[in-house]
Image (tube, rainbow, N blue to C red; front, side):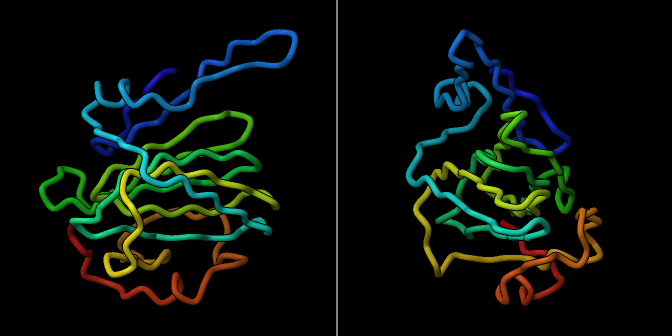
Length: 180
């Protein structure tokens, strides 16, 4: 597996290196020890799966406040998304900036979103499924979010307005940015 740095410290793109044979191929998509080499202590506490029926569905931007902050490793197992990590760490040189990555079932890439970053995605195809490995247990009282269309974020979502978005995701408070 290859690990690609992004403009946001700690946000990594994981690129599998499939080994083909007559059956198809095999690829490793997670290695706790390799992530530790990049400074990420990633104990998997939960694995979440998101099914999204329609192209243009938007989920996010979500985060968990400390002490329940979480790392997420996001991979598409069917379909395609534009996946976004937004830096909310006040001491980070990239505070308020984001990284967007095309994740598809075909490219097999995964995005590591570290603690202190918000996460969101928009589906690019119908019937898209996303798998998340998460380093902390979900705590409802620690949940937070930002509006997907906050003009200060400058995120170029593929479909505006989204085809589908939850009432909760459509009602997160605007400025100021929370810090994590």
